[in-house]
Image 1 (cartoon, protein in one colour):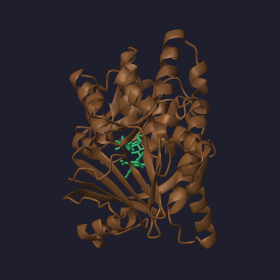
Image 2 (tube, helix red, strand yellow):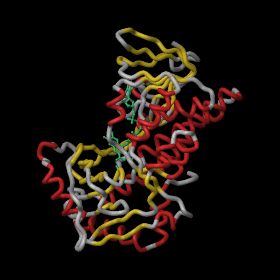
Image 3 (tube, helix red, strand yellow):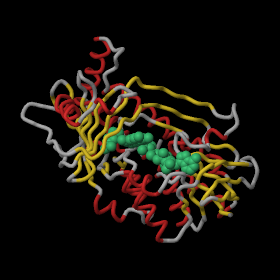
Image 4 (cartoon, helix red, strand yellow):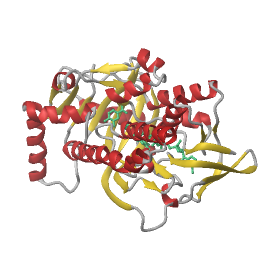
Length: 390
Ligand code: FAD
Ligand code: DHB
């Protein structure tokens, strides 16, 4: 097999890259080690920066996003039993966020690719990448019982944090930066209309909680938990009880409904630099992870592949490697901005077991500041809706 670009991973990064390249007439093959159904059902992020929603719409992949995506112009921060609105659009010259599930983006992109009869292989195994420092890198994998080799000009490592591409880079090449957090999120999807018109991020003595949504009929809610929390200890009634305590306000109740899914997500910050080795380019979670507070993970992945698609297009069209050579630095500027913002939102809103009263007072002071100072609220807002120029 041969393709101009071999893409490992059919998550949001790999599928969007394949789509953007196709629109520029560049052929790619996408290799995914899970099945289509698994990839389409994997419940993850749901908040898109306006620029990322626009990217998908402008690339012809946003037809359903435009119809079903829910535009939000603000978020609420809750602490000390009060809610405070951050008017995102008023503070950012009219920019907004769009609530549209990662599952839906992935379904839309897979459908476009399958309908166009373009190569996307699910259930591949034993994927390995080779000759990355040569002009003919290759990807070996098994599919339908046979071993195959995909020869390409460039390999795009879009295979997430646990993928094979980053670990294939020889020791000593990458610098790695990371932080573990002593908690996780227990997330649920519930068949009940969201109880608030906007997202609520709640700082509470029992731990952080978040009210979000996926559609007018589906709520998405999270509570801070232990990183290794055992779901067996969380029957539905306990989850609702905890959410009621952490999100509850006088005169307002959280509507409950059947829980359709639940899961625990660990929290980590991680960056590998540079995002390139020879002809291998890393994008999305394969190169960096943020804790979910602030909803940056999916957005960062799509910012990366937009730059990668532009750089590859320029390389093929004009034979100039300038953009490809600048790819890693250009991505990392935004990555580090998002790393700081996600770490800051996480530190502001969660309960740390190690925290003493001094830490708590600092958190509350900062929360009061971002909800009362226009300068501080604007800083939060512009990071949340996505910084235009980093
Ligand atoms: P991924 O979505 O991880 O896609 C990588 C793909 O590569 C996967 O399909 C994987 O199966 C495939 N793959 C892996 N190894 C191989 C291999 N060897 N060969 C072939 N294919 C391979 N972000 C938010 O903003 N908000 C959230 O609420 C949120 N929740 C999350 C919950 C969880 C459990 C996780 C893991 C992440 C969450 N994120 C969230 C982060 C966000 O979902 C990711 O940043 C986003 O999925 C990144 O997209 P990606 O395409 O880079 O990686
Ligand atoms: C969601 C996830 C986030 O991490 C966040 O900050 C906001 C919303 C969500 O899954 O809806």
